[in-house]
Image 1: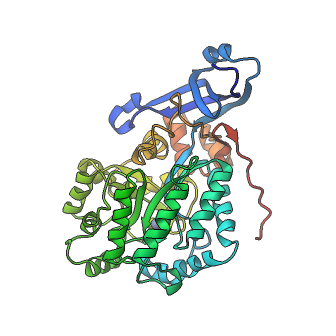
Image 2: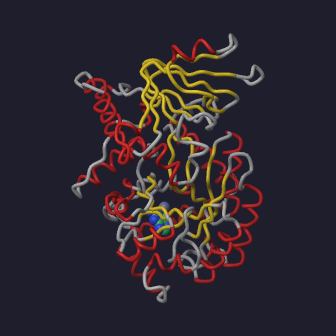
Image 3: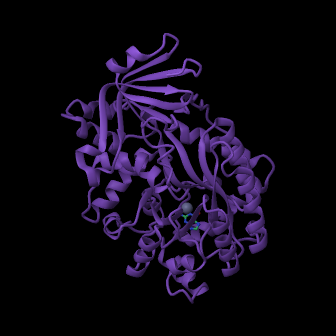
Length: 441
Ligand code: GUN
Ligand code: ZN
C-alpha cells in the first residue's frame, strides 16, 4: 500500500456479490461479519476480515466504524428521467395520456433559465440519500438539460450515464428537435462529456412513437460512431403505445424490429419495460445482447403490466432494474425491489433477498457493462459505497427481533427498506453530506 494516497477504511458487516445468486447460489455473495473495506485514493484496495486487514493499515489511515451496520457497494439505477422529478405521483392516467397530460408539460420547463440545474441538484441529492451512486438518466430534449446534469454529476464526482432525449414528432413543438439537430446536439454532448471524468453518454431516442425513421437512423449512426456509448429507449410498455409504434413504423413487423432495423439493438442498449414481448422480440434481444430494463414501481403505477423475469432469463436476455422516476414512485432501489418481488409473485415467480441485492449492485453493473468499474468490492473498483441500518425504522427493528439468520434479515431489508435505512453514502471513498430538508421549495 502506497503511503502517498489517502487511506480510508470502513468497518462493519460487509456484503457484496461476485456472481449471480440464481446461478452460483450460496457462492455468489461474500459476507464478512466484522469486515473492513480499505479504500486507497478513492478505489477499493481490499475487502475482508477486519482482524486481518487492520494490522496492515498505516497509522495515518482514517478508520470509520460503522458496526453493526451493513456495508454494500452503492446501488445502481438503470433508468430514470431527470425532468420528471416533479411529475412523480401524477394522478389517473396510463402511458400515452400520462405523457401528454403531465410529462410533456413538465419537460418544457427544462428550457427555463436555472430549472435544469435545480432539478439536477435535487435528483443527485435524492439518489445519493437513497444509496444510489450510479444512474442511467434521460434528460429532456434541450441540450442544456443534459449539460446541467453532467455538470452537477462532475461537481460531485459521481458516475452517471445520461443523454438528451431525441424526439422529432408526436410531442409539443417546444419539445421537438429534428433528425439533424438531434444528431448534432447529441454528438456535441458526447464529445464534451462521454468519458470526461466519471461521466458517460447514453444516446437517447425516447421511443419509436416520438421519432421518425430518419431520426432513429441518425441515432443508429451515433451508436455506430460511438460504440462505447449506451443507447437507451422504451419498448413494449403499454398496448396503445405498441399499436402506435407499429403503425408509425410498419416495415420491421414488430417493435423490437424497429430498433434493430436502425442499429439500435446491441449489448449496450437499455430498453425500458419489455412487458408485452413476442417470441420473435425476445429472440431479437437474445441475438443482439440487448438489455431489458425492469421498472416495477412504474409498471404498477401506470398500470402497464407485469415484467416476466423468468422468461427473460430463459431467453438469455440480460435484465437490469430501475426506478423509472417519474412513472416510478420511489427513488429507493430497495423499495423498487420490494415491488419487483410483488410483480413476480403475481406470476408465480420469486426473488430472494440475495437475488434482489445482487440485481441493484453487481447485476446492474454487469448489465451496464460497467462491472470492471463499479458494483462490487473487488480490488481496483471505484469506492462507491452505501451503509445500511436494517433496523432504522421502528417496524423493521420490531420485525428483526424474530429474524433467525442473514437471509431473513436481508429479506426484511429488501421488503420494508428505503432511504430511511441509509446511514451513509460514499462516492469514490468520500462521504456524501445528506441534504437537509426544511420543506417547501
Ligand atoms: N415511454 C416514452 N417515454 C416515456 C416516459 O417518459 N416514461 C415511461 N414510463 N415510458 C415512456
Ligand atoms: Zn422511462
